[in-house]
Length: 335
Image (tube, rainbow, N blue to C red; front, side, top):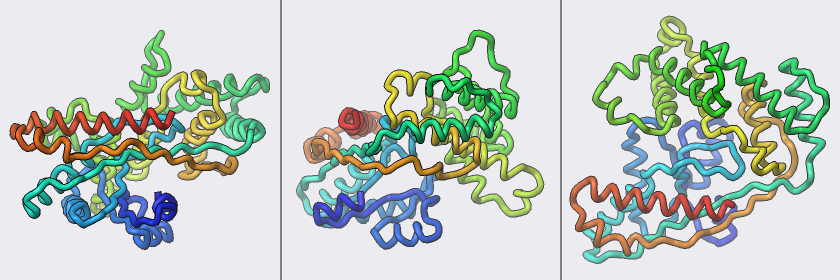
């Protein structure tokens, strides 16, 4: 997105998760106009900054509405509504200041990463490394059969570690879901998150798993040092949250339904993170990034209805509709 801003000769601001602001990368992010957001909690300072920037003339603000990474080449995970909600709040402030409704655009942008060369040898090497690490015997059959054997070993290992008993006749997607549920429950129970506010828990039913994971990570970050070494196993809890995010969007058949180089590597990267306990998997080849800019949506066209729909539920319907519209545009262009 920074390169895109350079191509069109316009400065962008960026909302970026606080976790990215570390070391040299963190300093670079600040230099290019990024500011931080604490995920999983109501970050009032970040919200104030966002509203302030959105009211500036000719402002361009980049928000990643998925709120995280699917780790899959062409999968969009459900958008959060915050980007739309804050945009409408900023527009509301502008209307009060100017006594007129200005143009205020949402611009969907899709980014797709494509490998430049046929890298079958890289796939074989990655499979070799994983098979060796997991002691998976290979008959050197086709790559997909080998990939599934590795994935099954990883799934079996995780189920054993978190004491998940696989239901007979359950398919992989059901097993993934049971594992995620057990891992989340383990984190929330250890940190007493679920017991802190029963009413809030009832309201949160149905929310995305990753939102719960971000909340766990936020609690872990704010634990006093003695708690990290005494009552709970801090390192294992944090590892569990990393695993939950790594496997959040995975489903059985992702590679089979469209066996592209990109889908193979997206899955191999995910497995390498787990098996080798690394954040950034091995380099597998040069890629190009294709950016497609979608049809802009002018919030001015929705303002009258938004302003007249005073009940919170009615306004939420407009916010949800706009969020779904932008998500569909991004996903359609990505494909």
